[in-house]
Length: 179
Image 1 (tube, rainbow, N blue to C red):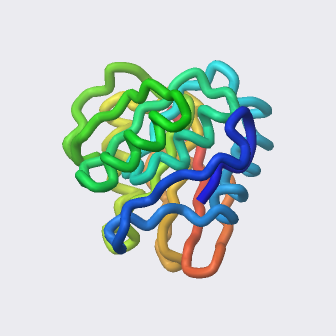
Image 2 (image 1 turned 90 degrees about the vertical axis):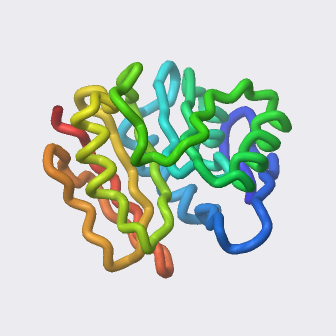
C-alpha cells in the first residue's frame, strides 16, 4: 500500500497483520481521489475526516495532496497503532479520535470531505452519514465517499449521489451533502 500522489507520492504505508483491518486497494483509492479531484479541483485548505480510518490511507492521501487538516476516527487498537506509525513516518501530527464512529457526538467543526471505508458487513454508510449530518459534521455542499460491498445501496436522506464505481467486490459511492 502506498501514497498515490502529492508530496508523499510513492511512500509506503504499514497495515496491521490479520484480517480485522481491510485497507482500500491502491486502485480503488486512486479512483476515489480521481473522482474527488475532478469535483474539488484542489484539496488545498480543505478539512477532511477519515472515518473507520484503519491505516489512515485515505486521510493521509488527502494530506499528501494538500488538505489543510484531517481528523482520523478509529477504534481498533492494532489499527490505531499502525495509523500512528504511518503518521509518524510521514511527519504528520495526527488528530486522532480513538473511538467508535457511532459514538461521535455533536461536531466541533464541519468538514469539507468525509471519507469512510467501514467493514463491509456493517453496511454503515447510510446510518453514519445521516447521523453525522444531523450532528453538524458536514459543511453545506461537502462531499462524502463510502466504500462498501458491491450490493450495498448508499442513498442517505439529504445527500445526492454524484458517482458510483465498482472495483472487484467493492463499490465506491461519492455523494454531495445538500445541507
